[in-house]
Image (tube, rainbow, N blue to C red):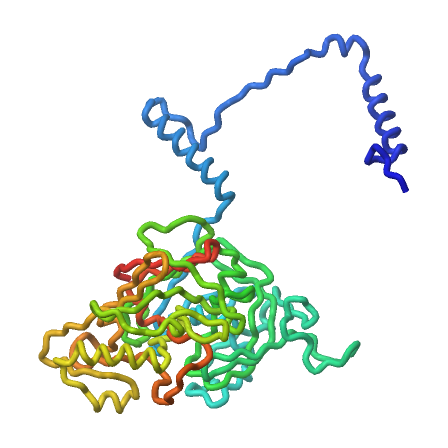
Length: 454
């Protein structure tokens, strides 16, 4: 069929012409003659407050208004940052309080940038298999008390597990979206709910949160808040542009001396931070925050770590990630041996504590009793010129304070004599992040940090 020269049907054009004709002839010729050709409207300046009569103050008001207007045009409408207390815990993690449901039910959630799901135990019959805690001591969310709660259907496109144990066109099967999540040696089993998440002055509706019914080999009673790179994570569901924290120096004692975790909806640089980009994740590890580390130094000595351990390979091995949920961190066997061999050389003037090494299963350990403590810095050089300096008392662990026995507590598989293992070769745990202001800039896909007393 040949196309018409007009995009509108002739019947519609005829109707519009008739309507305009009626409106035109509704005015008398006298009214038309008396209608002015121009209309003048008053233009009045608008200020949030009465403008000052002082010329300099008035100029400052204009500058402030111009700055606000420029920010709006450049970044769009933004919300103020949300802040929540961040508490160190005796098991080595850090928690924040979160309130879900209507009325809100508050629980403590472990901040974990190495995982992606927000979940809480949600039944009085919660089971914990081979756990070091008692299931009876675990606080839980009570779904039956909330009026703003629905199950996430297994037929929802965002459910990545689908409808389990269901035949095609079956009507008698569970409709919930189930999950099985692994955390190192532990695991959690449950199903997803849609709840309201509440902060002071702000609520987020239909937040996807897990209802865990069974745990495996857990060592703490807190719920889990995944901050990783996934649509299920807390910051992604909150639609923040970045989040940041500054971790306390602590000795695993459940101190209530909290700091602040910041959810930031604003874009742009944060003053004083050094930035390095996040790397593209290997397909097998899509949720981690990989960083491009150029080299590691111990004191002034560049450590001869092969590049295959510093950069993630196509076979999903190697590279460095940052993980707030891992206390001491991890180094693959080859990396661990290079670091500790150099540490032993530079610390040779101190007496080794083999008894401490046998007791905790990590090391090397040193006895500093009665000695002046001099420990070389552990330095990470990242792409973009960013350099993270970790002082000795932030990578050697002292049981109470920097005196007595100090150990290198980084976890490793060195004893297994494995050349290469799947996953990252280096995990920068939260113990090395203490007294660093840490920022995850999701909008600009980069990691920022600066040293400061937290």
